[in-house]
Image (cartoon, rainbow, N blue to C red; front, top):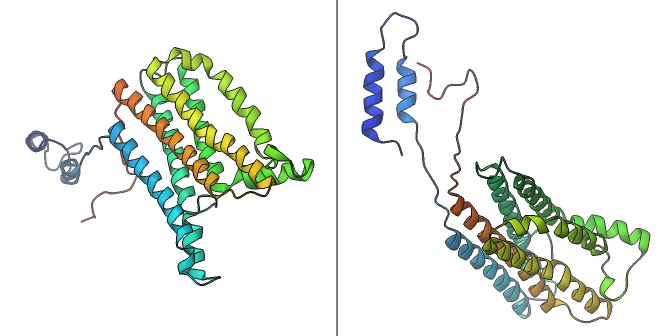
Length: 279
């Protein structure tokens, strides 16, 4: 927030230069606009934010479990229960768990973009890696929200290869696994240049996330192919994915804090617009 005395001093100093009837003077409206300018800041503590996001993930898991447990309380075919179940079902799409996962991925991508634009990074070669992470996480968020991997990609692959067997009963990740391996290999030099603390956190987040997105998905594929129940597996799969991104967000916030980065958001008016009502 602007210091009140400093703003008033600037106001009175400016008024001394206003000469009525002459052009180039400072108008009353300009002075008023200057006085009402306001600034605020949001302090982002890595530990508190990651803890908050972890609680949200826990809420998602509890909601999924409760939604399954209360089924006997409703009549068969209950529309009310169907609404509750679909909203909290971690194995479904376009619901609360998907919303949480999408927001976390987009938030992580935004943090990577902030790092890429920081003064310490943007002039070095590392910025390309950070921009690559930002773009990749944004695309993953879009994928999560739009059901690209299981919907679009999976169905297109099945139309060419047919339904798989065993751990490849779901075929969509036959395309994604090579992409993950290639991108992971390209980022090895990047991880080596980072301080060990961040490299370990990034590797841990990747292991947890892809352990759920690919590892647990392959287990689910095997179970579904052989006719076993997959309900418990879905909980572990989705929880691993969410927690992997939470770990990544914690690492990114910690990195930004150690860089001493500050993000400023400024709202401006287009030419001809007025912040104050006309007289």
